[in-house]
Length: 238
Image 1 (cartoon, rainbow, N blue to C red):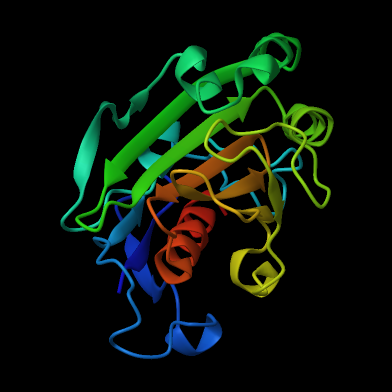
Image 2: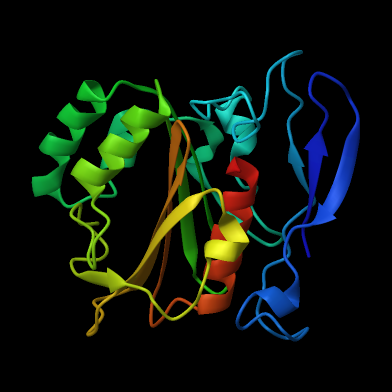
């Protein structure tokens, strides 16, 4: 079970909290629940005098930490994807997740809403489940929210369609608000019948940063590791 360690503001001081209690997350109640073995999670220390995104005084919820350091690390046993090792990526790599007819509009929107950086990590587990995590940092929380609302959507289905999931529906099978606040989640599951792979996706809005978590697998993506991944990534951003 991963533990989240918070770096002190401008210091090396740290303290730990359990990142996820089994009793708090549906489907995470037993030792054989299928969770992945993530390493201990660490929030990077901030520049001296810089607040965390949701502390008093940081009215625009700005992340002052290096965005790459806020990416969820790959779990034990994972094979990291080439070009998605936790560094900066070009916008084209992020856009490649979407259906071709959605890419031109999204590409223009990334310029219009002033995306500053995009970081990503991807991996494949021994059971064939692939995960891609993208973090996009905007100039402000207002721009991140407007991009999410106008380009991604927040309804029963996302407006921006993934290549791997031509049709998705809001996943209302679990309650995540208490686990991820103040990060805002929109979680979707691919509608049946699945194609060659089943895809789950989640958007994470955290101040000036928008995250996308995508998991795909031939047959079906297990719910437990997907939820675990989303919750842990949310906690790193919050």
